[in-house]
Length: 317
Length: 310
Image 1 (cartoon, helix red, strand yellow):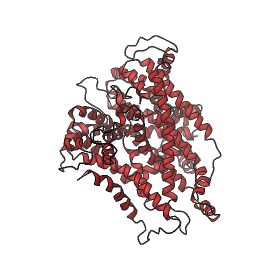
Image 2 (cartoon, chains in turn yellow, green; image 1 turned 30 degrees about the vertical axis):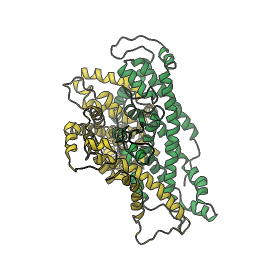
Image 3 (spheres, rainbow over the protein chains, first blue to last red; image 1 turned 120 degrees about the vertical axis):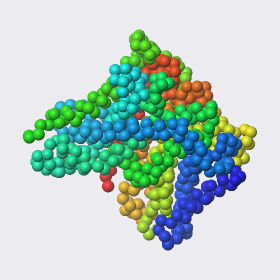
Image 4 (tube, rainbow over the protein chains, first blue to last red; image 1 turned 90 degrees about the vertical axis):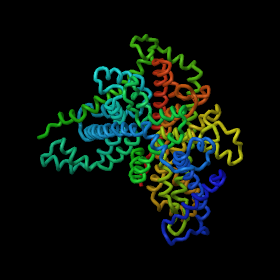
């Protein structure tokens, strides 16, 4: 396929397809009435931005089917063959392992973040005791600091910790899990604090009168009532920790070549990208990116309503 | 009271608080101390040098230009992102045809929201690699493909996007804007939808045009969300490390060519990891901290307005 047709037909095709997608069937679009001009105008800009978002992503996916020569020769070349060779090469280079590493760390850190964060937020929000305010502001303050500020000492602390407790130091899952959890706590506590405050106390009091213990009241009464808030902050943490780059870059460094590579997905992909500058397997690299993007895309499309609502409410708090 | 409260409170707080103090507060506090020493990072012995690191910082031309670049990001990124997001949110929510029901959103607004929001869930590493492909300096890059197809240049002279001293930083900024607009669009859109429709209908009945309703109704009622957005984007602007360090040229942590796209964070990492000047790097961390602190305080002061409830 030649270069120009792709460039010029891409945009109008997209515009037509979105505009033609009828939301209310049978209702013709009327250009004559007051908002008609604005309607076309807004669809134009909206569709243009949609193309700007989708275009690069499609281009990457197409790239994983091309060969090196096709990628280098022209941006508009079409894949000559539709095989999955690049995908299996990318997988062999460790994408699968990086995925697994990320899943292990996230499973641990998200569980801990949600558990510890909601426990702390709950106690701080609903119990009066000395030092309550101080501890709360202590947590809130942590959300304001840029992580660079802690990076240097953190690196040496984890390094030293590793010499005392081998499974906790640098390049260890458990170490990174604890660090992720600690750095997610300020926002989690801050958000859930206001959420637990807004819950009615009647149900909780009824449970207490029935002889429920504080701990049980928390897990069986308050947590189910706080579900929507917990989901919001969970989504926020999933994205935050999934996207984390600086902390694993600093902390998940192999101590020697015999040390297993525990890179997170983002970090591992980036390493591959730098290596592939020499090996120049661009299709493999593009395939790796596609593999890394697909699960996110699937999860996002299935839960986009919750993701959008969760992130929006988490930000506005 | 049948159930004793104190052990419960203690039991629920002890683990999170200890973890937090040990891994977050303590390293933060240490940084302030280290910034006053000539600590090389590796070996423990270090000498107290007072404010020498800070004095050196403000004589370091690389640092000063990094500071300028951070300030540029701090102004341009929130401004452009918020304007674009507001524009699109307005188009989505009131850009539709005006019929009997007053103002309505465009068709397919849900579709647009899903698409626009997607970059927000992409990991920053993916984002960086995606745009490394886009910005390739040979004719295989998508953007060069476009400028060649448009006839702005020919195949022998592709443009040098991120490696260009003047435009490198702007290329990174474009990626940040590309990825953030969707999120703020959804944020503003949610805020716009919570504004009662009858306010618009009343204004329309009084003969107000869409532009007027936007500036007189929508914008003032959205002010709080815009403030929030500004604070978040300021944090993003201070935290452009991952993109700058991977997308711009430079032997360690990007920032090139010749410091033209240097930001404080890349300089910090290079001084710490590559040059082993940990004390100096800590001083930069403290400067970043104070800028962030000033920003937060200013934005809290500015945004202190009467809360409007519907």
